[in-house]
Length: 186
Image 1 (cartoon, rainbow, N blue to C red):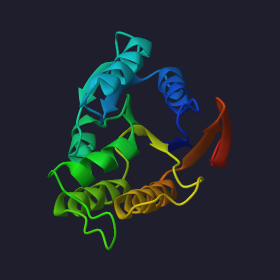
Image 2: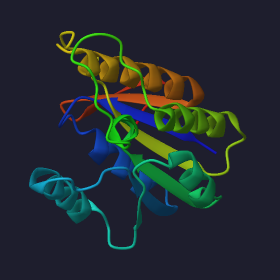
Image 3: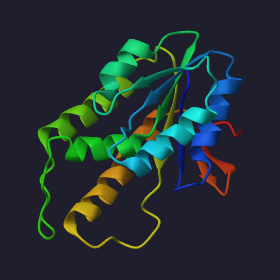
Image 4: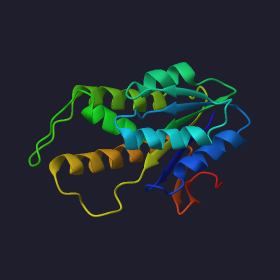
């Protein structure tokens, strides 16, 4: 079973590439969406993503319990597309309506620690089906101002490294062009 991580910046084409990989797999596709429409802008983004997906793809929305959902959904003959890890990370950091200081140390909530560990534990288990993860590469710009923003960038980078280490293929997308960082090219 294969595990692929597709990284890129905002509007880089990473989701479109992940969708193409899922479509070309010839397997049943389950689209595991981690976002939720908290405002009109996010609702429009979600609608745009939905419009691109083939009607036969099953869509499952799960903002926090990713490992549990992967255990349920992954199976031979199926590919699960997780879009995206950075939205999932945001959900974990802010789900308990956590307030963070603008300066000083950021204490992440237990939900974050537990769900992140559960995902990495699941990735360490024997594969039960194909998975394509989508994640934003947020660490290529300037160091953000504010403790919570820096904590998010740090945690996103750590998560991407940990997931990449457990995936057989890692692709980086810029301007719609994929570059194989690990494993087979596109």
